[in-house]
Image (cartoon, rainbow, N blue to C red):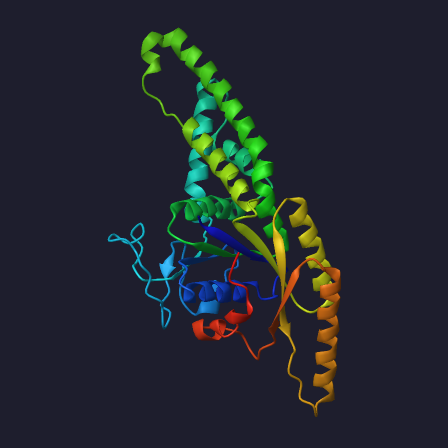
Length: 333
């Protein structure tokens, strides 16, 4: 069974660094780990200083543990590799949704409804509040988890608003897809009856059947919802900075996630100033201010584990730089 760890929070707080560090630590511990960015503004490639695309690629880690595999490896993945990474590109999944729209348009036209492909696609796109990023992320979540190729999948999510849409999408899109299925069924029955009346039994041969595609799409979203709400397998970690506005936004995010039934056990407070120069009054003031904020966070979230990460000079980039903070992040989901 594959575990899932999601990192989320407002933009610019270091979600990508935390996700990458967790992925590296899990890999160092010998767990086959996939690190995925669902943020449209990808920064995972920059963090790891490597080119990433929509297909998982192996990352070379010094001192990789040698993992036992069967004689064929794991579903064709490279043997003895522990860490993979990918950045989801919504366009790579767009053809699947376009095919559904075209199939619906064909059924409507067969029933005598004058509706062009572009009009149907607009209806399909407007049917759910989530965009292609969220839909693609959920679609691939199911694919990654159910493949059995990885022990853990770590997600670097988009800023708060996009993340909440990610978790809302299965519940919102379900009724819409049910409506589409009903509309398609009615259109196909009307079209079949019309063809039968004109052409007779020969009309039953030929034609396309996109109904299975729509049903499979609906099933994948339902499967994604089950995974997101499975507290035994999925955990969401909120990342924030030691700032008042970040604390307030994180409080709203935790509340909304819990209302949705998503497991939230930990907060990661990033960029905490920890080692002031005793001769620097400004450094001391910054240290005390951050200490007060961390204390406020612990008081605001008494039931959550609070993990702190130190402030670093410059960007944390490259495998070794990211690995340097990994030990401070919990590995288990």
